[in-house]
Image (cartoon, rainbow, N blue to C red):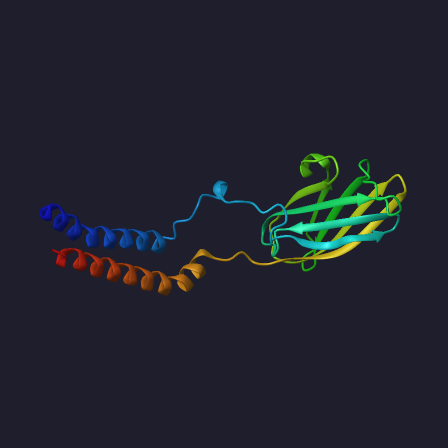
Length: 196
């Protein structure tokens, strides 16, 4: 029995150090999830920006959000809910369009918000591909049974974070964590060997 305890105790520190070294090597290589495996934030939960929060705009009450927040180059999701301000009934047969114009170079991105893209018969949504960082001037156009309405808004798109920057910031913490983990494993293995 003692033979197995000593043998198991002596391999624990080595296994822990190998695991820490493997994690450090993966981090050093900048290994990340493939793009298709990353979660996309298309709704609330700390990642949506409310542009109009059930405000009366023309003849409608409009809830208008964008996500993710903060926005970065990639997919920008816009979601709109249109209702009658008097009755509160949701308007399901409106035509909703959006146009974004980059303030620096005039690049335009346009889209139609649909129930299909929202995944339900109440909301209208569009998932636009934004390739440039900077300030975008936006116009949302709603055309429904009570007439037209328009929302003018600004959408800021930040530059994407670089993996190398995150790695440089996280490297000291990773080294410290591996060192503490190795120290803890060595210390616990020495205690197991000393016990009769």
